[in-house]
Image (cartoon, rainbow, N blue to C red):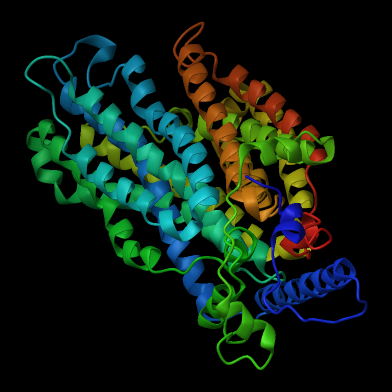
Length: 545
C-alpha cells in the first residue's frame, strides 16, 4: 500500500512536450521530465477540482441512498436480534422452570448477539484492505450479497438431529453476516467521501450513517406489525412465536435486495482511478459520467487526448509503504486517535443498545401478563427511546457537521456523555425511585449525544483523514477497533450485570462507561479537523504530487 507521496515519481506524462534547450541529451531529458510532471499534475488537479467544487446533484443523492440503504440493513440486522432473542426464549425455553422459563440463557444470549460483532471485525479489516488493493467498485456489492444470503439463512436456522442447536446454527449465520456488515463500513464510507463535494462531504457521509437510526426503529416497527398479525395464534399457543422471530429477521434482507443492483453499477471513484490505477483519461470520463465534469474525449486540451493513448501504470498499495507512512508519529497519532476513540465509544454504545431490554425493564417497559403483551411493550419502548434520542442525534449531526466541524462535535458528545453516564450511574436507583420520567429524559439525552457526537464522527473522520492509497484500510482498522470494544462490552456486560443480584451491577457498568467516554475525549486531541478541506489538503497529497 504505497504512499500517495510517491505519485510524482511514478506517474508519467500523458503529453510529453519536447524542448531542445541544449545539445546535452541529459539536460533535454531532464527538462522534458519537468514538463511531463507539470502536465500530469494539471490533469489531476482539474479532475479533483471538478469533484470537490461540483454542484450538489442527483448523483450525490443517489450515492447517499445506495450506501444508506446498506446501513439501514446493517442496523436492522444488528439490533433486531435484541427482540428476536427475547422471542426465541418463549419458543425454545417454554418448558423450563423457575426464572429460566421463557428466557434465553445468558451464556447463549451473549454469543448470539456477539457473533455479529466478531464477524464485523473480520469484515472491516478484510474489506478495508481489499477496497484499497482491488478498488472500491470491484468489491462494492459483495458485502451486500453476504448480508442478504446470511440474513435469509439465519431466519431458517434449525437444530440438527444430533449436535448443533438452533442457537449455534444461528451463531454461524450471524458471524458470516457480520463479515458482510463489517465490510460495508469502510467501503460505503470511502465511496461516499471520495465522490462528495468538499462543502457537503461531512453531511453526505453523516446522512449515510444516519440511516442506522431508521434501521433500528424499523426493526421494532416490524416486530410490532408481525406480532399483531399473529396475536390470536400467540395467545392460543406461544410456540407460534417461532414464526414471528424468523419473519422479523428474514425481512431484513428486503432493503438489501433493492440496493444490490445500484451498488453493482456504481462507478469507480475518480480518486482511486487517479492515485492507484493512475488512469487519468478514465478518471476524467468517470467525473463526466457522474457529476458532469469535463469529458476527456471531447476535451480541447492535448493532455487528455494524449492520456487516452498512454497505458495506465497501476501501482498497488503495499504494506511496506503503509508501515513507512505510519512510522511517523504525525501520521500514526491520527490512526491511533480514530481507532481508540471509536473503541471507547462502542464499549458504551453497544453495551447499552444490545441490552436495551434491561433498561426498558428498569423504566417499566418490560410488560406483564401474556408473552404477546410483554413483547409488544418491549418493542414499543424501543421505538420511543430511539425516536426521542437516537434519530434526532443522527440528523442534527447531518445538518450541523459542516458548520461546527467533526472534531468539535466529537468533543461535545464525549463531554456530555461523561456527565450523563456519571449521573445515571451514581444516581441510578435514586433517580428511578423518584422519577422514571427523569431517568428516561437522562437516558434519551445520552442516546442523543452518542449520535450527535462520537458515534457519527468516528465513522466520518477516518473516511477523510488518510491518503487515498490506504484510506479504506485505515477506516477498516478504526472500525474494527470499535467492534473490539463492542465485543468486550457485550461479554463484560453479561458477566458483570448480575454481580450481587439480578441486574445489581448495572449502575456500576454505566459508571465504567463514563470512564471510557473520558478516554475517548482525551484521544480526540489526536484527530484533525477535516471540515472545509479537500481530501488532498488533509493528507498533504497535493504538495507531494
